[in-house]
Length: 126
Image 1: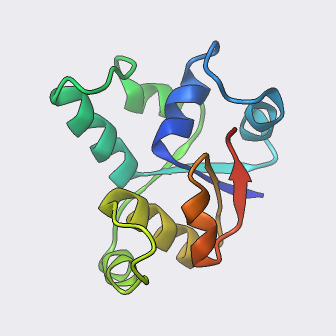
Image 2 (image 1 turned 30 degrees about the vertical axis):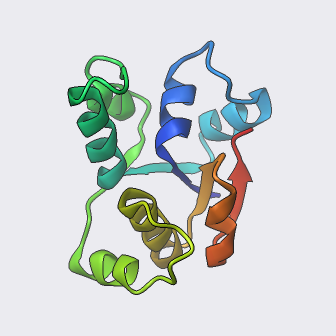
C-alpha cells in the first residue's frame, strides 16, 4: 500500500506516545508499505513551528529519512492539480496533499474527514 501522511499524522507517528491508533501506527511501520510525506507538509509544519503555534521534533527531515519515508517534491503538475480541486477544503497544504495522493495513487492517513470528499482513499488517523 502507498501511504501519504497528513501533517498531524506525521507528528503523532513520530511521537511514540501520540494519539495515533496502534493499528495505524503498525500500518505506517509495515516495511511492505511505501510511506511518503509531501514537502508541502514539511513546509506547513516548519511555518507553524517558526510562528510558535506548534512544536515539532528537532531534525524532522532526518527522522523521516531514518524511517525511510519518501519526501515528495511539489511539481508543476501537482500545483495545477491542487489549484483545480473543488473548493471542499480551503487549506492549501491539505489541497496539495490531496492532489499528490490523487496523482500518485496514495492512500492518505489523516484525521480530516474532508479529504474523502475528493475521492481519495483515506485511512483514519483517529
